[in-house]
Length: 73
Image (cartoon, rainbow, N blue to C red; front, side, top):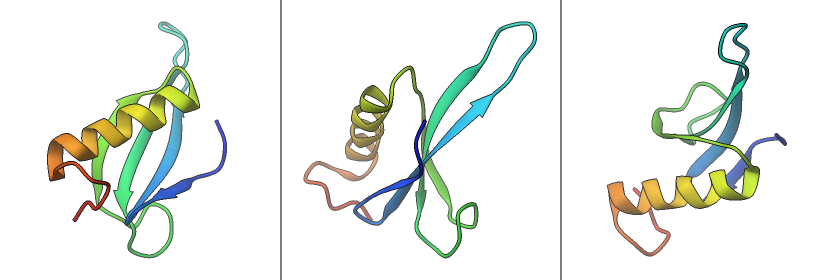
């Protein structure tokens, strides 16, 4: 997947776990922006088969958690 992107106050980063038994798994993780990558608080994690689907799923997760409208606190 590509470099991290920012949606509102959240940085979306891509994580790939390499597993010999089950194959690679990719996740998209939303973390509250608070400095360098990895220092923010993780608020959502979704499986990510594609970057487009992951972005939609992360936005849905943030909406479910903090309400609709794209302004997540």
